[in-house]
Amino acid sequence: MEIAIIGGGLSALSAAMEISTNATNPVKIHIFEKKSQLGGRIMEINSAKIGKVDFGQHLISGAYHNTFSYLKKVQPNFSINDLVEQKMYFIRDNEIFPFKNPQFIFPINSILGLISNKFFTFAEKLKFLEQIIYIKKTKHSQKTISELLILEETKFKNLNNFWKKFLLSVFNTEIENIEKNQLQYVIKNIFCSSSRNSRFYLPKSTLAKLFVHPFWEKSKQLGIEIFLKSKISRISFLENDKVEIDVNNGNTISYDYVISTIQPNEIEKLLHPKINFPNKWKGNTILTINFKLKKISLKNGLFAITDSFIDWIFIDKLRATIVISNSQDIQNFQNNDLIEIILQEINKKCYSFSIGNVVSLEVLKIIKATMSSDNLIINLQEITSFPYNRLLFAGDWTILEIPQTIESAILSGKIVSERIIKIQQNPKR
Ligand SMILES: Cc1cc2nc3c(=O)[nH]c(=O)nc-3n(C[C@H](O)[C@H](O)[C@H](O)COP(=O)(O)OP(=O)(O)OC[C@H]3O[C@@H](n4cnc5c(N)ncnc54)[C@H](O)[C@@H]3O)c2cc1C
Image 1 (spheres, rainbow, N blue to C red):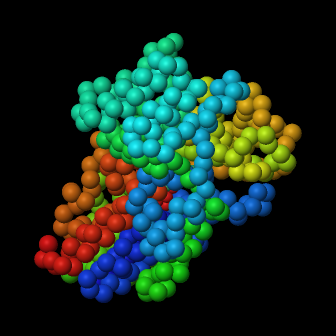
Image 2 (cartoon, protein in one colour):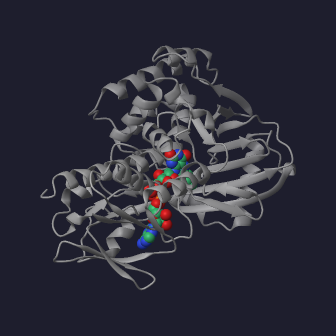
Image 3 (tube, helix red, strand yellow):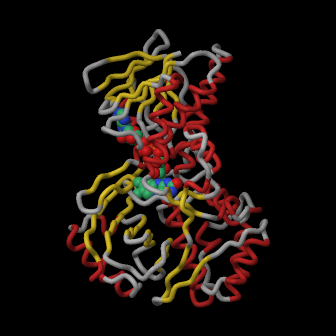
C-alpha cells in the first residue's frame, strides 16, 4: 500500500508513526510538508531578538494520554520528568493567588485544592464543585455553556473570571462557540480526575525538540520519506481507484490512499472533482509577545491576569510570554501601538512586570491558531463516499469530542491509522 500524507504537523507525524509500526502488510509512506520544517503549528522559530521559541506558547496537560504514548513511541526513554511542571496563579488587583491540586484521588484532590484556594469566596468554592459535577454527569443539558458557568456577577465575580480565562486558554474562542461535548471532556479529564491530569507542563526547550526531532530519527528507521517545501496544489480521484496529487515542483504522483492533515478550509480548495464541505470554517487568532528580561520578581509559572484583555503571562526565568487568546479585536494594530497598550496594561495589572526590565521582545500574530465552524461540526469521513473514500482526514479539528490541541492532533493520527489497518485486513471494505 502506498500512502501520501499531506502536511507535516503533529497529526501527520502521529499517523505516520502509528501506521508504520502497526500495519499488517508493508506500507510506503510519503509526507509532504509545504514549509521548510516539520511541526506545523508547533514549529520552532529562530528569532534574532529572543532566540529559539515556539510558534506560540503551548501547554501540555497531564491528561494528554495519547500525546504521552506518542512521545514514548518516538523516544522510548521519555518520562513525564522530561517536562517542566507549571504552577498556576491568578493575579487580581496586583495580588497573586496560587491554584493547587494536591496529590490525592478525585474528589479529595479538588476539595483540598479548593480549601486552600484564597481566590474564590466560600460560596464560589461550593458553586464550582456543583458546576463541575453537574457538567460531568449531564450529557444533554438544555442550558448554554454561558448559562451553566457564568453566574451573577456581584456574587460570583471570581468564579466567572476563572472560567473566562480558563476556557479561553483551552478553546481560544467565545464561550458561545464552545461545543458542549468538548467542555464535558475537559471537565471530566482535568477537574474530575487524578491530580496528574490537572497538572500542566511545558517542554524543557522547544516543542519541536520534544515532538519533531526524535520523529526524524525514527522515520529513518521506519523508512518514512519526508518531502519538505512540497506544497500539494491538487488532489484528483482517478477511475482506477488511485488518488493523484500535484506537488509544487511539477511532479504528479499517484497513491492508494491520501491522508489530509491540513486545515479544513484549505483542503476543500484542492479536491478535484470539487466537493462542498457541510461546514464553513474561520480561523481564531492568538497573539503572543515573547520577552527577554533583565530581571523579574515573579516566580516561574503561569499567571492569569483577571479583568484584563491580557489572558496569561508565562514566566520561565528571564523569559516571559504574554498571551492574548481570541485576539481578533487588536490583531490588526501596528506592532508599536500594540506593544505600547500591552505594556501599559501589564504595568497596571501586575506591578512585578516592569517595562524597564525588557531587553527585547518579539510579537507573533497567529491568524489560524484554531478553527471555528459556523455550524454543528459534521464528521467528513462519514459523508465522503466514492470517489472520495480514498481520502482520509486527520488534524486537530477532526476529533469532535476534544478541543483543538496537541492531544486531538495526535489522536486524529491514531484514528486514521486504525482505519488504514482495518482496510489492509479487509481490502473490500
Ligand atoms: C499559538 C498557539 C497556541 C496553542 N496552544 C496550545 C496549547 O497550549 N496546548 C495544546 O495542546 N495545543 C495548543 N495549540 C494547538 C496545537 O498547536 C494544534 O492543535 C496542533 O499543533 C495541530 O496539529 P495538526 O497536525 O492538526 O495541524 P498543523 O500543525 O496545522 O499541521 C498542518 C500542516 O500542513 C501543512 N500544509 C498546509 N497546507 C499544505 C499543502 N497544501 N501542502 C503541504 N502541506 C500543507 C502546514 O504547513 C502544516 O505544517 C496552539 C496553537 C497555536 C497556533
